[in-house]
Amino acid sequence: MLFAGTSGFSYASWKGKFYPRTLSGAKMLGYYAERLNGLEVNGSFYRTTPEPTLQKWAAQTPPGFRFCMKANRGLTYSAEAFDKVGLARAFTQRIGLLGDRLGPVLLQFPPTRQRNTALLDSLLTALSRPVAAEFRHESWFDDDTYMVLRQHGAAMVVTDEAKWPRAPLVALGPIAYFRLRRGYTPKSLQPWVDQVDSALATHEEVHVYFKHDSASPALARRLVRLAAREPVSR
Image 1 (tube, rainbow, N blue to C red):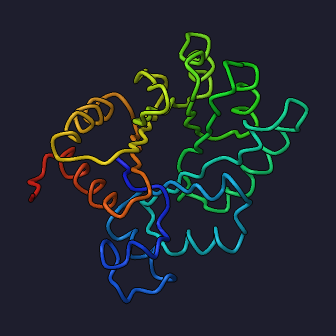
Image 2: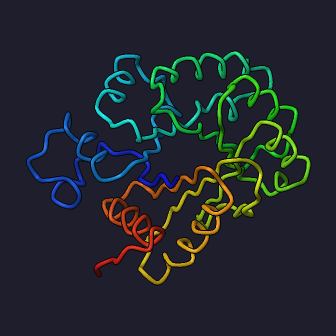
């Protein structure tokens, strides 16, 4: 199953480009979910998402839709003494309100955080649900990391961003996860379509999320159509 979308959806600047100019903010998610089946939520990285918001999101989206919540930054960006495990348990309990709309958690490690498989293992255990881990230091691309991810059925995020090292696409479990952070032409998007095709052949779920740009919904829809081998108008 392929889930594709963007990082966030509630952008007034998208009106007249992706959203109709007169569409109210309250109707954005419903409009989005009629056209795309996945959404990466980055706001949860900075603050706890209120319970009523999660319940409203679940009610406004169809059963086949998935929210990929970005884990709170305290899990990976905080000092060593911080209770990361306690926060991970509280975080996963809160987002559980999304029910069957909940996709894998995006767990992002900063570039200053070098490989620490004990920390990774403790966080994956505490989150106790599917996770896609994004590493921004090359030391993580190692067999010891892959072993921990496999034990938990977790994915390693493949990120296309000039500032960060690109993780190899390693078959670790049932999920593959791509974050495509640049602008793409039909020609430059095609290699990613090919990678997604390959991932679909070896994974139960493939998630692909483009950056928060008004052109990104169209890119996500194009990728889905190409991966399904449907005609795509230019």
